[in-house]
Length: 107
Image (cartoon, rainbow, N blue to C red; front, side, top):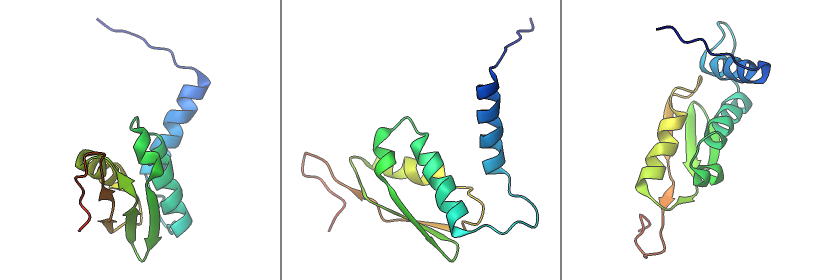
């Protein structure tokens, strides 16, 4: 059985923008602003609201994540969402895991 789905123009434009972010343009040099904008879009688009408070910085191919999150799951989720960004050779995840129970990844 074949099911046809119709999409609004807004949905189609959103899908095109998402696809464009994932495909580097040949000969286009990725700038720090491009990397940080892509990271911000990916984190803001997550259903995990805490990820919107992750701070990112980028230098020499290294994307650094900073901030505090309430679980190791969210720390790993943030890193996973940012893998594959054009121009990023390595992700340095410096997010601290803190919770109201007093358990922390901080030394």
